[in-house]
Image 1 (cartoon, rainbow, N blue to C red):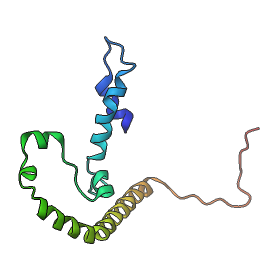
Image 2 (cartoon, rainbow, N blue to C red):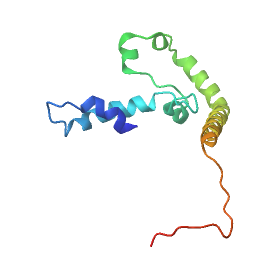
Image 3 (tube, helix red, strand yellow):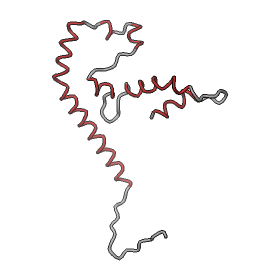
Length: 126
């Protein structure tokens, strides 16, 4: 995933791009960490820190979330969030398991089971 996101950012047929990936890597990693997962519905950042990331553009342009920030209310909401942390992680695990079951069902539609008997012909490469 990192390579797929890096390639369009650094590839240019006219210029050499050997060292450009180093400058682009933090932005690519940030985008991967703040993009919701299809399996869980949450961002990897949220699953680790139990809070959504605030982008620098939100700070610079005064997004409603930033303007509505209240220090005392933030402490109370942090305590509430800590109480609900186990619940959120359980939801993430359930969604991930459901996603994996869906993938397994999709894969099983295209795979045919095959049983081998003791005297079946087995080819050996010598």
